[in-house]
Image (cartoon, rainbow, N blue to C red; front, top):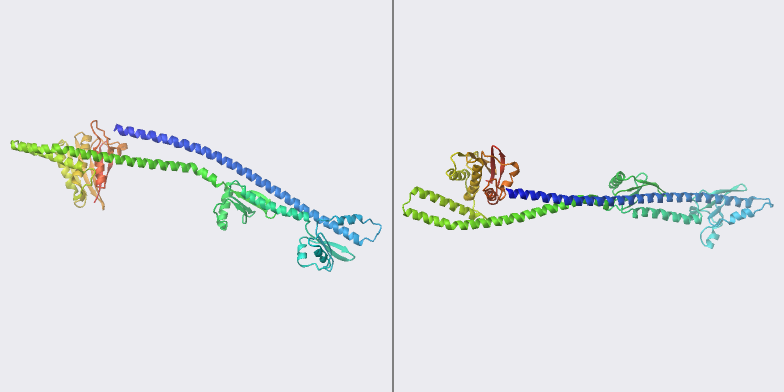
Length: 505
């Protein structure tokens, strides 16, 4: 019993040591995860601020372009007024150099002068070859040329009761700036996605219905509107979306969430704990399996050796009995000696069967129990009473090995007698159901602590000062390994203990 107490104590020590190692590992890993997570969140905040600043820059640039449009129109209106003054002014004393300068300095804004009859009168800064430019004059203002100059409302020129119109386009400078602006917006959207620190990003319109750009979403299907809305709502719950203004898209929202790496790091301690736990469980199972296999080999070797050693003295005793018969010794004494020799032969057979597959024969269970009781009754105090109670409906027949099963009953009976100190009642109760047979062996002894219900079947476990602690261990092996049944402590209290044996029909 001390062996198993020490063994259990060492198990607790090792378990505690392993728990400390696992705890320290998980704690340190968790600290690293928190630091990495905070570092990534800081990068995300910097990225978010950069997104907002870039959006503000785009907005300011767009305002600047709008102002350029207004200034271009003012210049065209001024150019139109100067042209009109040159045409309609009759006073020769007026200095026309100012108006001429205004007209000549328009080198960037394409304009098209169309009279009341929709005929092109003149043009300036219109792209194309020289021949194309000459051919514009006198042509009808229609088709592609009219479509190209219909972006803005024309400026009327009132001449001698008729109204001509001055059509214009954005200046060449503005057009180049517009191309730069479009490239800036496109690069802004791509950089928001690419430079998002591996953070999943979705940029939508103000209503969250149209996706303008997205990135780092893994294998998510953006054609599934329901899945997209669920993803957007999940992102909005984790981080407040950024509001940005884009010239071509208006108010937009930038949704983002934690990166896949951060999500993995958050669950890494749990995965590590599970992996360590699985490793310890597998290692313990393998160790226990190897230890049990080794114990089985030791048991088999000891049993075979014991059977071999008993064979020689039994043969000698048989010869001595024959010699006593020839010398006329009392027959009663000889009969008792022969019973003990038969008992020794039975024990030898039991040991010889350990490690080999015993032969099971169907026989009445109550008779097998009574056979063991009859043997134990003659070798036990008269103060110990034995009872066999068969509660089954019919005469139960079970496949057992009579010698090995009787050994189990003897071990249980001897332990019960020791627990009762030679005074008490031992009962054998037989029950059955459709597939199982139950044998309850009860005594009126001092009982077994509940904490030892499983330990009593371990080799070497005993509460006796001179016991070896092998009886119940052998009984468990006989019932479970050879009879494919079970044996366990059903109940125990200071008033007595009940062992249950479960056998197949």
